[in-house]
Length: 495
Image 1 (cartoon, rainbow, N blue to C red):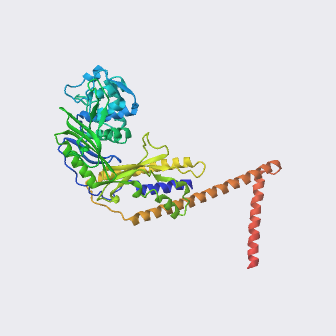
Image 2 (cartoon, rainbow, N blue to C red):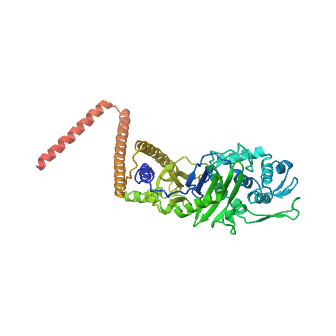
Image 3 (tube, one colour):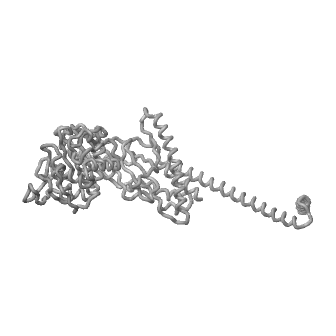
């Protein structure tokens, strides 16, 4: 019976998850246009890429590098730790580069330094923080590259904490969006990054302290570049990098990240165009409001007349979000299941469902089986997951081969819901037939074992007497013939 649960679960998941040509992908909203060489617009909640231009090309990032620097410092330091500025930290910067006016021997808290780093974009502060965390610029650069790799970055290499010109210091729009996504999820980072002003303490060159303001113009209501819903971000400029800009913005529950690389003094116009495009055309929704595949598995079991309690824990992560075009329909969304889970996956997750609009990734959700109703159920669930993985892998391979042979033919192909119902009924009938055969085989096996045991007992008794097994068989055959003869005589008398 437990195998039946696995079988029906597999069938249900395959009908609801496996990639197919059931729906032709709806039209994606017309994209924005930017002047910069590279740029990206990402839904921060789902990681969906809504727009991209040369997103994997390498560019010099300039001071948007400091987003990664700040993220590492926040993760490794207490805000109340003190940082002493060395000679190298203050003077190992390009002449004329941005500074907070600090000097050798000045002492600030990590909190003060982070405000100066993100709001003022102070390069000597970036150096001092790097020395405080790792002992040297090179040591901190190694931490930067390790952190970037852990976030999924594949196009980057960082050589300093400030972003000043270095031919070995580069990133891509995609990588910068991943780094920014991690920063946006960090409450301490966002509190600092969204601040409109901050007062630095007394230092050698600033005996009365100094008030600093963010360099990002979209945060400032008195400027024409102000953008409603802007949460923060980071500006950058060097002679090699040109204008670079990272911007966070939120409206109606949709959080967006816009990255501009190698802008040509158009970075604010480009960013506004991307954000307008995103807010006008997209929405972030809860997956559970749309994907009912997993809720229907228990219903499918009930319809087939089978107990569904062992599968009552099958569910999607209720906090998972999906990015959808406002003008689109969920029927255009396809999904596929993967069992290659990251280390950060919840311990009771058995799989992850990935959602797509054509070849665009819209979001993902972990799939759980966490209800244990009987002893040993956990191993049954593990077996079920393994069986689903095997069947789904075969289905995905078949789908890929089919898709390759039909790449030139993209005409819409729609399968009516009634077809899926019929397939479900056929699957249930096949499952019930399998049960009948299994039960019949089971009883036949038991009967055979019982006969064998009876014979063994008789033979044991014969061995204790004087009759041989051959004589016993002859007598048993004679008894069977006598019983048959008696039955025939009784039948004749009745006639």
